[in-house]
Image (cartoon, rainbow, N blue to C red; front, top):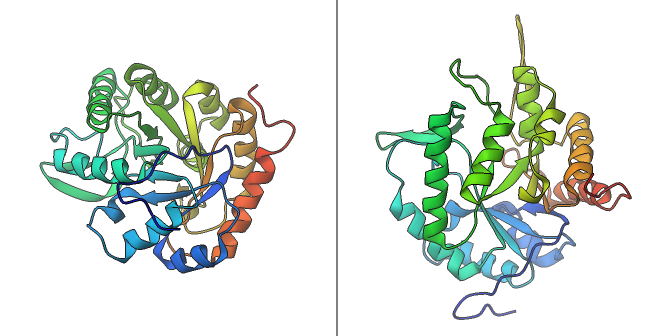
Length: 289
C-alpha cells in the first residue's frame, strides 16, 4: 500500500496487545504481517528526514495503528523545555498521526547536558506543579493529549512527601494528560522500595490509563541484598504477569505493549509474549472492577 502524500489519518488503537517496532524486525514484520493490535516506536529514532527508516515505517503504518513513545524530552528537568525537540515531534505526529503519544515522567538533562538514563523526580508539591506546567506546554505545542509513563527507580529522595502513585495521578488529573502505566516499573519499584504494587494500582483512576507497558527486568544480587533493574532484555516474569492481570481487572482491557530493547530476540518471541498478554486481555475477568 502506498502511503498518502500528505500524511495519514488517525487509526485508533484497539485494546489489544502490540510490540515495539525495532529496525532488526522491519523486514520480518512487512513479510509476515503479524496479527498484533499495534506497533510502538521510539519517536526520536525518526526525527531525521526521509531514508530507509521512514520508508519502512510508512509501509507498516499503512496497515497498523501506531503509538509514539519518547525518551528524550526530559519533562521533569529544570532546563527550559526543548522547543526544537517539541517541534520535531509535532512534525512527526502530524504526518503519521499516531493514536497515542507518550513520554516519561522523569528528567535526564541539566544545564543543557543530557544523561543516558531516565532519572526519577522528587515527589514534592514543587516538582508536581513544575511537571504539570511542562506537560501542559507540550500538549499545547502538539495540540493533543499526551501520556506520561511511571518510571523505574533505584533510589528515593528523602524529602519526597507524596507517594509515587499519587504524584502520577495528580499530574494526569491537573494537566489533562493520560497515563501510560508500566506494570513492570511498578513491580521493580515495589521490590526496590518495599511497597505493595497493588497500592499503586489502586491509587490511579481507571479512565486516565490509556496504555500499558510490560517488559523484563534483571535482578542484581549484592552481599547486603538485591536490586531490580528495568533492562527490557528478557521475558516478562511471572510476578509481573500476575500484576498485569490485576491491572486489567482494575482498569479494564487497554492497549498493551511488549517492550524489548536490548539482546533483541527473534520476532516470534515478541509475538509469543504479545499472545500471552492478549489471552489475559480477553479473559472473562478483563473488565473494570
